Image 1: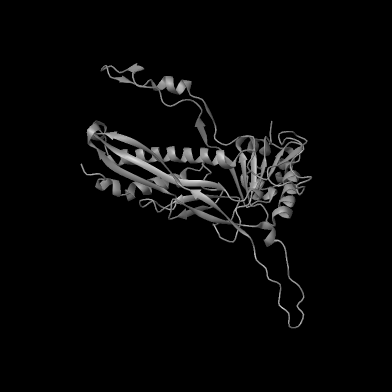
Image 2: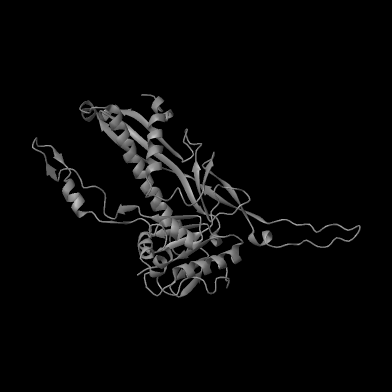
Length: 355
């Protein structure tokens, strides 16, 4: 058989549309919501970084007759992205397809399954890139501040003195003071906040927050109300979970009546353990524009290689092709991305906000 075959060169548009529809309904995942996606034509390239101090200093001077105005400008540096290709596949056996009521249902279900695999992987990578200590210039734990960037005292008085799960803590005031310090240090107001699941649970039960909303229409604490109290436009709670155990059990641990050995799914599920992908006790406050811009800073970007064999703006594509040697059709999904912390001063991380 010639290599590559025709199926290798063709992206299955209907199945890709199924994948996109599933991605849009998978609300638990946050990797595509917090920072702008930057579609790129090349797998690897450079992007510009501007000096913050040049943009926050004025050299304007009174001009005397027959003299020149002061010359100004800004310094530029470059950094590199590399959009790796991630992939996974699901095979549909001919016997299974022959017994199915609809071929497309099998293709659709397999597409949704492999898409979910990619979304899990992307959220894990997002957590490992952005939602941890040692990344952002300002990092807070209860009663202390750690600077991961240049030595500075601009965040004195910010952060939180008590964990937000304590009844006597002041989460609204803590975030408000941090927002003021953030604006002083960066010139921008943070507009996005990401909360771990346990942080959101503690905030919904905090007496100060309950007291402030008790006279609202329903008196129920919602994410929108907390976002308003914290002064951010977007607030996301990370609820996505993943198994923390090994891969599926090997075949042959259980037998069907016909003597065929199959995995013991009950034993596999009983031995599995789960946890939130993002640290459930932490929070991230940051600035991110609605869309990528050469002249606007962003705490982070996700570069998606849409120039890769017909991939879309999400950097994802779905292929279906024949695997004759195993009498199966293969649904293969690929996603390309590189997540970058672009401006570490545009993020403030609250570590272990709750007990």
